[in-house]
Image 1 (cartoon, helix red, strand yellow):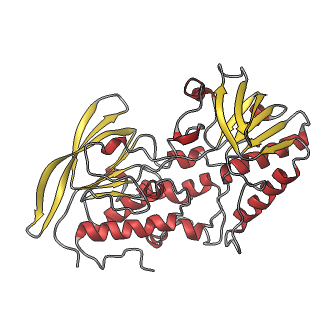
Image 2 (image 1 turned 180 degrees about the horizontal axis):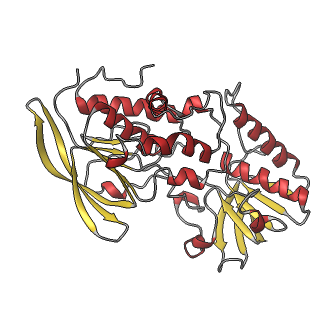
Image 3 (image 1 turned 60 degrees about the horizontal axis):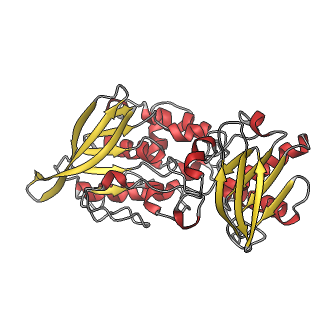
Length: 380
């Protein structure tokens, strides 16, 4: 049995993890408010053109699929591979707009800061910290909200890493940042006119950068004036390490193709490993970009028309400056009782993350908040 205590839950972020947490709270019967600075599934929609590595069955929870059935919505097959936008439209939006979740969702509400007021009894045997949240609405009005537990599902996609060594900006990067592409670019779709027939420098050694390089080389086959310079920090001539018997075949196919392109360096692509970015200068939109890097101890300079900086993302820890929240390092428990970091943000600098991990975190966090260690709404 769930304990009679009804702690108030604040959920920060309306992405896949935040919506899942909201559905769980509603199903448990706990009062909650979800704060999302945009619209539910905002960032998923932004990279929605990307086909996901994981099939639907790895991205949806048993509770979510059960809810879709109850709403009489079509449920994709577990083996279906979707784009981000298809996943948002088929799964996230219906859950966010369901009758038990929608009334507690505050879209276009940005949480500016979180503090603690002390202790509030919700049950004779349970004490939870009462948090204060400063929130700004779309009309710039501000208000304070209270909660007994916080599920921080803000993720990392909003904060790209810097290009410079040591986690700091390269020279000139601060001024150039508004004119550079740090997120996933729809190179073969909506952003095609920006890249076809142009020289693009791609920086980064992960799957996002690899996808950008593969897409740009496709444009090179269509228009031979399209050129790509790929800079990776690691020493490997093959940028992406392949996983033995990788169960995600689409991910492995991307790694094979990108590695082959980097190794051959034929066509319209050149790859340079062991590159440390020293300077980036981009004076404005459509005004070109200069990239200076040290490659194997030699200083090199490239003049290009576009730059894609897919160098990963990091968590925003500024919200919790007044709390005893330790830096995320793979555990959703933070050191501050009642404050949970769920999803990609909990992984710290480790970029590998699957939604199934977040589902496990949600289950455990709500078991702790309710005091019912056996609580599991994800049981098949």
